[in-house]
Length: 383
Image (cartoon, rainbow, N blue to C red; front, side, top):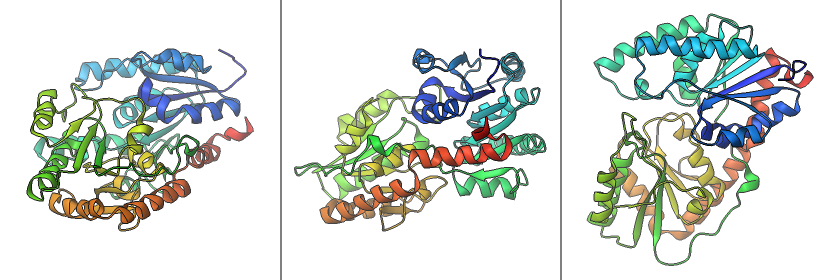
């Protein structure tokens, strides 16, 4: 390590998320004079991170079901990593990492920036268990944000206002930066596919919380009840084994056999997947700011999504797509049918999507917003 440079940690759940969402920000921070450390679980791509000139540390915690002893153990492991490096900046992404990492990071002198990429199932599902856990979480977060070295960044206004409502943050330590952005140099307004088939795409992990069941229900309405057999419903994403909302492969294959959907699994070239689609649908229950919809807009596709946190900030209703009430599959099917039957409408809304994403969500604009918040506390540009 270069002892003459201030050190900054960027902490994500897995190495892939860093590479797809924070790599360019880390490179700019490096140009500003920081020695960049990445803390993440290694899924086999840590060598790409070190190849970029960053220092990689393996995140010790698992993704799901942490017990009390495991939580304490992981806090001390992360604290040791932070203390050994002695960073000036710690930027953590994701609720679980924020909780454990902040408790670990308070033992350092670093300024801690916490980006909420979504609030998870505790703020999505309402039952006795989640209600109790949510109250405990709120108490913990209130304690964390009493420390003036801890700053909250939200990817949508809904989550920001919710934290203000609970008295967790205020205007002095809470900000909104909408997502991680999309690099428009890698995208272009793309003509719609030729032919009679209309492809409706849902990009995302195969989780019930992504609206997979609702997507299948809409397919049943469109292909079954309406008889529009020229419409193809496409799921693109992998199975997230161990996640509480994970959908089994057998269920996906059954739906595919019945003709309701086509499942592509994981795809590395998502740009091509978007270009081969006509309409992108994301009936997710809650998001931070879905990059999948930004990328769909960046190739010029109309979008249909629920009126929920994150999703409703990517779509202007009746401009670049439609926003429908949560769980209203009948309205979703009706709005989708409009787009299916009107190619000119798809094209006009697709062009609007491209312009909207380009204006509001371009990658380096979002990075500048992050650096701007850094500058309020650590003066990154003067390092």
